[in-house]
Structure formats: C-alpha cells, structure tokens
Image (cartoon, rainbow, N blue to C red):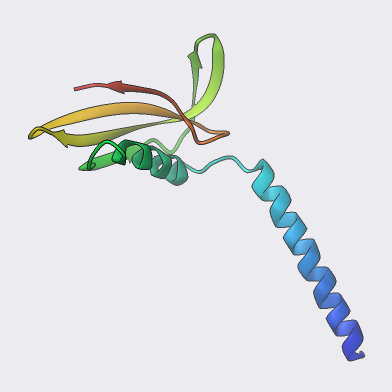
Amino acid sequence: MKKRDIFLAFGIGAAVGFLAKQQVDLYQKISPEKALHNAKEAYKKNGPISGSWIYMKPEEIEKNGLVFNAYRGGITRSIDGKNKQYEFYVDLETGGIIESVQTA
C-alpha cells in the first residue's frame, strides 16, 4: 500500500468516527450522573451541599398536563445549622430540573 492510501484511509475513518459521535451526542439522553451534577450545580448557587443522591432508573411523571421521563434525586443542604432536604426531578431529555420541593 502506498502512504497516500494509508493517509486517505485514516482521514476517512477519522471523519466517519467524528460524524458518528456527533449523531450519538445529538440523540443521546442524559445519564443519571450528569443529571445529578446539573442539579448539584443549580443548588450550589444558593449555598453549600452536604449530601446528594439519585435513582438510576428513570420514572414517568406528569407535571402541568405534560408527561416527562425523569430521574428522581435529592439534595441535603445545611442552612442556619439545620439540614434541609430537597427532592427534585431532572428531565431525561434536557437535563433541566422539572420540579423541586423541600421535604424536611
């Protein structure tokens, strides 16, 4: 094989790999770890977090007449020396927080 053929094959392979990754990223749903990370970043804007959790299996929830596939999770924050717990739902498609309520 000539060097030109090897470089051509490598270039085509790299281009196909790049395009495939772009398509996968476009249609891939958010992972539970990424959903928890997004929620933690949102809560950190209002103060430190002392604990967090997330269910790995998505749930179907209804909010304002719309049905979402979402991950359910929770955050614990220490506010004025007291632990406050919040439960949230993160949209599986976008990673945005759909609902957040204080539970304790």
